[in-house]
Length: 390
Image: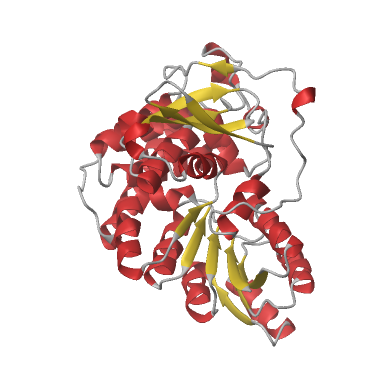
């Protein structure tokens, strides 16, 4: 019986992970969770999983009354509470489905403690992939990616001779605006951006999909997970999101992972340590498919992906700046403070101002993240003031 902690248990991945655990009670036991502010859902989770003995909430006020309400459960709060949860709750696997930089330190701490990590928090590898890999070598902890693309690549790469592989090909839906012109992007709304054509996801990742920053993050992930260089990782637009990734071989043949657009497949694969297991999801019916469509990637239409590639080439701490400036910009867009097209301008500004640290340690990554946050917010304030004065 594998004891599991879920960080971000009320989010999209967290909810689907709970479903997989519930469907396989003979294999998994949910022993600890973290949540943000959804106390109503937390109560339902605690009713459904009586084995939960440790919980982290975001707010101190929630912590105070919940520990009185549930005296048999140990509660923590805040970002520090995420580390306390991992430290105090005995577990075999931590599922990190937090969104943003806040997920990095829990990922790093999990690995340092020698606990296996199922990672949906892309940002952990984006900001500190090299450091996490160093710690994995020391602790022997394993990392399983909860991501349809990297799950697909793992399956296609299994048992293959690396010398026979030409490229890894990550597919992309193209996001909410794949059928728009560049001029049309100037006036898109938040509602437009959140209307993803294939997947149902949280707001942040849906915007990242629309800008294609999500693919930039996935390229960085793939570099760390599979030890392939940037020039051997390609992105292919694929409308239906049925082919999740491909491996191209030197004889011009491909292996592809094809399946339903359901994250429970990738979650199950990670929970079962990169092994296939029956998943309760809709079956893909090929006789009902009208066709599969592919498009060449236009980097000019997706400047955020271009900036991700720039940050990879800059190296070191540049990807930390990439992540935080994007985080600030997306948050500002979702607050209706900036236009969609300004997201890339904020990221570009921060990257251009940054002095790269080649091999940052934990403290330097945290310091760089704070610097990027401040300079990005400063840029937005200046833009907003200029707009107001105009």
